[in-house]
Picture 1 (spheres, one colour):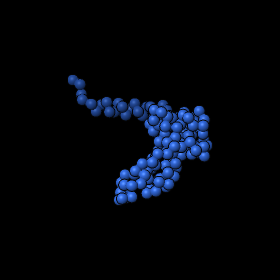
Picture 2: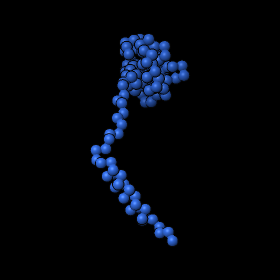
Picture 3: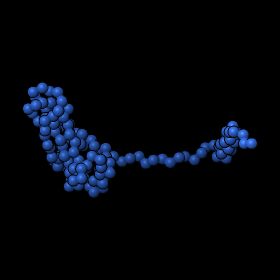
Picture 4: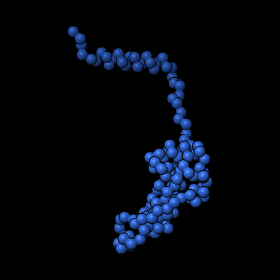
Length: 133
């Protein structure tokens, strides 16, 4: 994954941000949406693209675009930086190798002893049932 190449391939859309801010929020476009075309990217290898699709499939559109928006700041420049950070963090997390799951370990105690204890407990509970006449 080439971070600088990804940043070059980003497209940005701006719009008016919602929320408080008075007149400022009504006249400036501070909300920024960073869009990244996963399938058309030259910054990711084919294997990395598959990983991103499997991990972030619910966030990628039918056209193969991963979109992230930020409107927490009052400045378009700060929101743009926040959106880029958020997108790169998502991609890094998707590409991180997962730990393989460990299976159950073999029993340390004698397995026959455990099974015998379970059988006795089962018989004890069966005797607590209703008496058949």
